Length: 299
Image 1 (cartoon, rainbow, N blue to C red):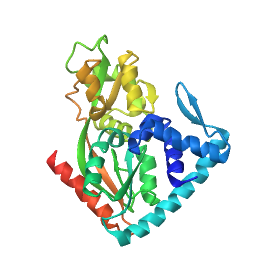
Image 2 (image 1 turned 90 degrees about the horizontal axis):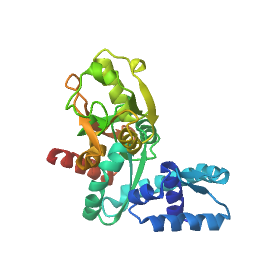
Image 3 (image 1 turned 45 degrees about the vertical axis):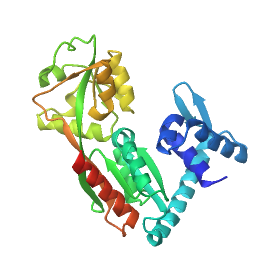
């Protein structure tokens, strides 16, 4: 048993997907499967169940997952202290991200940063904005990029990138022939939102309040845990989806959904670099923060 096996297992458990975990860990899917299979064989237990709708923890897996997270946190704490001595030559940088920046933005930058500092190891944790900021507070991740601000005296938020929440409908939806809709037309529709705790959800609720509409007044027929699920539901004409522009770009280019503008609402939002105000950042943490700020300036 080794730390890479535990990290692979924990990430697949959290994401419910071997494919997504492989992408984040810069590994192939067979390599991720091999790590977890080796862990299961070492322990003599089945930790994960594969099903059509994803990957789920077994009862044994739940127990091992809880202990694995403690071991991983302890290991990363050791690496963080060592990193203070190593500068940029070696070390591990543990990053956090909410779903949109974690899946659609950061991956394109991590490879470039790794090329500049080949001796380092990068780890990316993805979760809801709420969960990721909790990890920053707990010093379990060094830096994070999220889509909404959860104010806390020990957290520092630096706006870096810009995203836009867009309204999408199926090609055969009654509104599909329009380029834009009014707020009244939008609120009359059956809406599909992200789950509570996501940055996209928090931004949308704030924007509706700004135009005098409380979230409880909206006809939200579905709350889904992933942006991809919302896009798929909108494609199936199950309602009007509200999703990140970064995430829906491919579907719009393929023409599988239509975008509707809402001129009465500003649906742009900032993505934030989050860091802890407690403790001293390592040289590696400083370098990555400066790298992201540089990328923001050049976008």
